[in-house]
Length: 409
Image 1: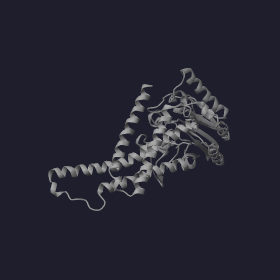
Image 2: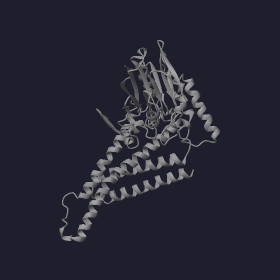
Image 3: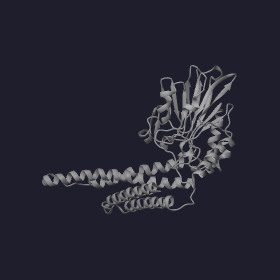
Image 4: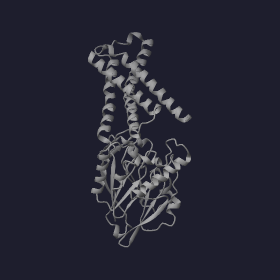
């Protein structure tokens, strides 16, 4: 609880300082503006602030709201924060400029000329308003158009030792469903239709079925139970599945929630792999599939790859591991016989830029490998961008992903 109060205090302190700074900057200029610009600016400014305050109170002060609603509250806080931060950046730039002018006036008063036309400060404030409109419009668009805008991403990997029976094997991977964030069953169901249209031989789910609690799947279990493939549907747990990010009545209640979540995988017809390996067989030939519980650098480290790998055989080995940091930290170092690791976890931060061969997301500041296919020597890592969303109730630039990977020789 003390950590929660500290975080809440920091959020309120930073938000308060930001509100004061941006309001002071606006108030110093808007009396010189036309009435329509002044009124429009005031309405948007105070509406964003009121929405953020109401959202914070709703998130931290009252119960009874579902997880999907809390995602929207969090999104509104983000809106206000990003808009005000963008505007504050322009104000700060102008404050620095005016500081140096003040220094120059102190040293050589006669050399400072009077500004003509629109003042530079007025220009910077208006430029800041234009700049601040970018996150306001784009984040709104991401919520309206991005949350369920599923994209099929196709890739292929060559494995020289792939048995002939598995030539052209089509694997569909999804990850990070986060069922507690969903609010549109029809849209989620359309995504399942898109998966089935790929006619996969094999389906992988790489963790984070829920945000916190197993009951988040109550309204969506029937939808995801539609997933089926000739070689099966295999799944693992992610860091959110252990219920570490919410308060429980007791450790027993937390443990019961995890057991219930494991049962849900089975009820949907998914084979949950818990630090173990299985063999996939086709026409008398086999490849090995290994699945571990969550193991991530800086996150829940429950997985035991040594246990899961022990005794595994076969010309090709595939690994399901939720957190991609596992690949560099353990897989590449100690398990050179694992050909491909399938991960998720990052969501690609749910926002960023992907165009042509270029991609960037704020998550790249935290993870060197955060989306798509990576190769080091003869080992591969694929990071799915996530099927669902968490926190921000949308996606901007980094859209929800259905991965289709074909294995060839």
